[in-house]
Image 1 (cartoon, rainbow, N blue to C red):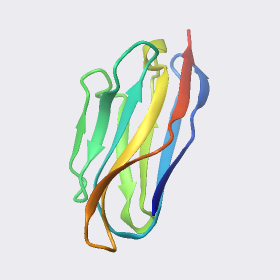
Image 2 (tube, one colour; image 1 turned 90 degrees about the vertical axis):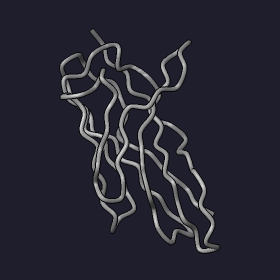
Image 3 (cartoon, rainbow, N blue to C red; image 1 turned 180 degrees about the vertical axis):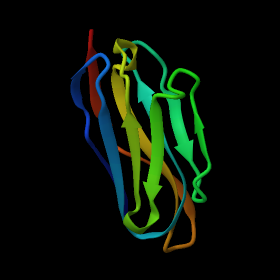
Length: 120
């Protein structure tokens, strides 16, 4: 069994910052790519940022220059530093990870989501 647990969401004023964390635990042999998605009310889930095991990153155009994704492989944790937040960043944020488990099979796992609300 593998679990991803997110933390760090909350309410912040426009222009403020938040840092999301997502820790993976369980029968993990290795974690490949990790990513953050978000879903706003009435909208489809969208990719925010992803990071490979080798720390290559990619971002949605809407967050480039404001958000930074990083990871700590020793802690099986991925982070999302969000600066200069805008009301349109309001959404539930989900982390996901592509994980090789002890049975030597690879699965995609998702966290439960954390709410980020940016007030104007």
